[in-house]
Length: 123
Image 1 (cartoon, rainbow, N blue to C red):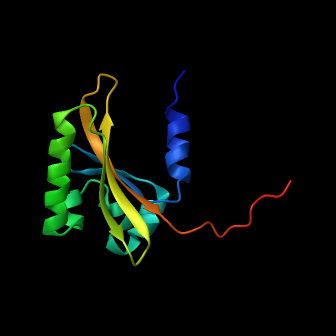
Image 2 (image 1 turned 135 degrees about the vertical axis):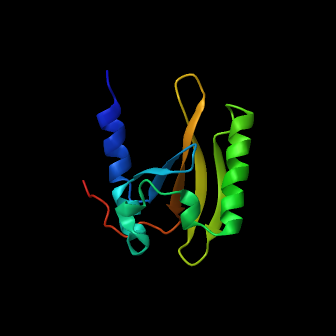
């Protein structure tokens, strides 16, 4: 069974920005939340550009160190990178691996700590 359409739907419905990069640090995919979040920086036009063009020097060094750590072991797959107090969110870099465990890319994932404000479904 090809699960591609299911995985694509999951990532596209995520309300958190997800930016996927290849090992050359090129942005190869941005989910709709990321396109909206980074609209003032170019939004979808960032696809094909280097992730390093979107980060300061310190952040670029962190990305390089995390990728080196990912390369050390197939068990090294997620790294917390920082907390943004202003937006109350945590940022992570997550390894992407093929079926054999080879590193093929990575993504940046932001998770907000704010409580949900939508009204819960009542049964």
